Length: 124
Image 1 (tube, rainbow, N blue to C red):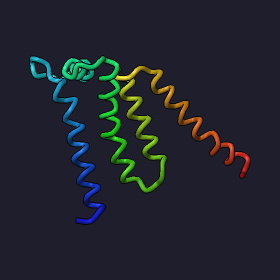
Image 2: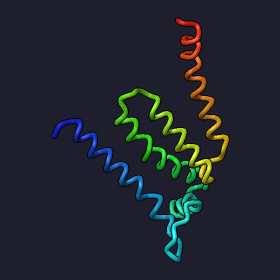
Image 3: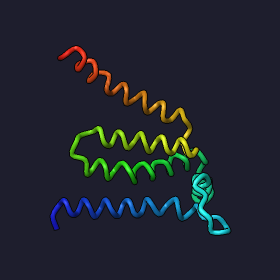
Image 4: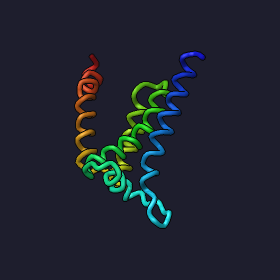
């Protein structure tokens, strides 16, 4: 088996395991899945604080969407960056992460690109 096939198989296994984690804990007594309660159910099941559970559930969704784009992208860093901001925005919108989390990550990314933009504007 060549190296590329092995990477793809490992990626599919990781995504499958990560995707099944939150949904196993999200089912209520009447067999309905409430996405807003997933971090609460995970925190109760694992015995961790709610904020840690929110970060864990958001990281699972983040890895589930960004990792395949990062592996399969041939265009550099822009497609994974776009997908990561879409996923972070979605997790903020459904209430799994506080809004300041997205603001801090946006500031870090902006500071990372500050030197690139300066060089592009000045022509260096």
